[in-house]
Length: 430
Image (cartoon, rainbow, N blue to C red; front, side, top):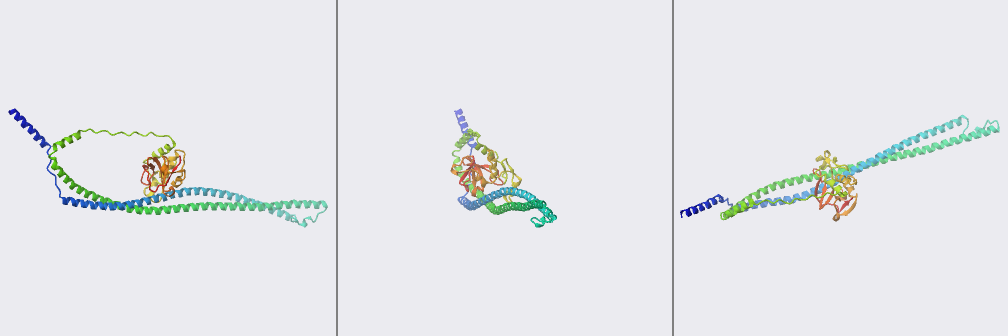
């Protein structure tokens, strides 16, 4: 009997001790309904302000994106003007070479005129020394016989013919020199006209780009100010939500405490079971097999440049190059000191791998191949934005993705296709 009593006491003590080891802690604070309601009202006010600023920021960012697109378009126009200026300079150099050649020929023609005049002067002097002129009767005076008279007539006829030939040569050489001088002047005028037109186009493009850059910088400042205001209010909202969340959490903890005493053993068992459950590894994705056709060559060359810095005006058929100055956004990012690609430069390099050599201007690249509707675009097609494709270009990868050199301060990346402002056709070269 004593043994059974001792065993029962021991069992009771075991349960008591076990329950004490897993006892629920004292109850947490229980905030009042008024405190919770006041916290919610404060959080709602902050949330409303965040929503208002979010709307303003969305409009500002849309405007900034438009201005960024305009800057990109003007930058590509400046790029076009630079290419056109280089072509005009080459044509001007050729025209100047032609003009120099024509002037050399004109100088030679002038020498021929002088030689012809010298011959004519010698004929006139010789005729005067004989005391006669061509066709003069005095040349026949003093003939001593019919034979002498006939000889003089033959001599005068020969001299007269030679003089007339010399006179004809003078006239011909004078006309030739005048033609050569006229061609030389026309060639010089053509060279100066092309040079002036190209210089003016470059100045106009630079001026338009600077106006766009000024507007973009102003909007960027306004957008940044709105972002700062929104960030400040978001911090206040987070704090307000944290406060009300803390109060609500305290209420939930208090409500939970009321039940924890009744089911502490069950909860302990559940936690132990959950802690003992092993984790299952996830599946491993398989790598895609590479392709060797021309489209894949172009795509792989573009993808191989991911992470390369954007540099306005940078890149050619052989790879990345130093960027160039644009007088605005690109300069503020130091693009002219960076080695990289801009959007059209990346396309030049990618397609050069397949033997297709594109110019360094997206507007020209848009018209370099066959147009296909966007609904039929395929891997390896070029996508364009802006009027005439002159704002931006990217390479379509398929599956709604593209690879692009986006803008100054960024790197070459893979991104979803953006349909805002996109041209309705893709350009297919392969």
